[in-house]
Length: 377
Picture 1 (spheres, rainbow, N blue to C red):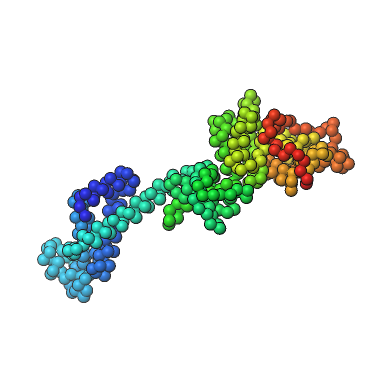
Picture 2 (cartoon, one colour; picture 1 turned 45 degrees about the horizontal axis):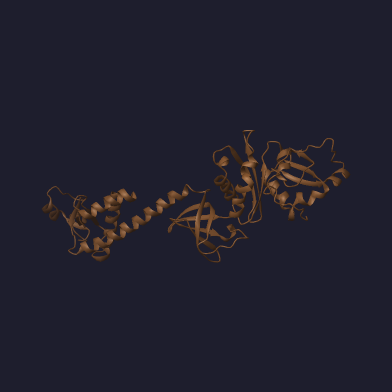
């Protein structure tokens, strides 16, 4: 080892951020192990690397005693004073024991330590980069898959897409480019492990932030997302400025913005509804595309009774209850849906006192309220 090696460590420190002194201390510790393994089993050795020249020396550390029982660990007081008269009992004497061919072992050991430190530093840098990307969206390339995971290349690292985070209506092929949502970044002995999802509601939220400038700049806010990945989703949006149409902003000219997201999610239907502080309006909006005649609110139980026209009952409930289920998840309110005739028979609906929510969708867009035909309950 020479000064060129020290210069290389200095360059490494500048490029990779690996402190030179930490690397040298690690090399010294590794050389102690290498010395014991190749030359001696004695535990009392110290390795010193000269920080200016790179010269390596090995020292045996021995305790000064009156009578020597183990010459590997002890030195007599007489012998110690021959080295330096100031030595006294119980002092530690260091005697150089550097082997002649230790340089070869030192070079090999140093290479291994530096390689390991560089790998650790690179892993740490990647982890630092990606820990800040949790709950964010990234584009990756599908590399391979097995029965448990799909492995997606995100550039610096390979992410894992578990089976339960894959969309049921989607096939993943080698070299496919997909957008995914980073759910978790963990440190492991093999480097950072990145978990991603295609089903997380956060993916839908981030896609709208990318596609809709008004959401990105804060003019329009996403208040809630309810999603059944690969089939249908609902998203509620709000604009503080009454001059801004939050639903229209998300739909985009001729439905272009929402259609881009629908295409990315392989045809997943998306209902965009306007958020309201009023549970009457909010629940009514959330049940889009069904028309709502009345919304009765129970604040204590955080529940609502919704009355819809007879011919739209199945549409309001949705296939296998999906529309009602997503609306409840979106709003956070329990929703009980009754047809108009049933509500009138029970005496719980009077058109004269009904609380009718305001219009919730842009009727000119075919992308808001995708279910155009009544679905059987």
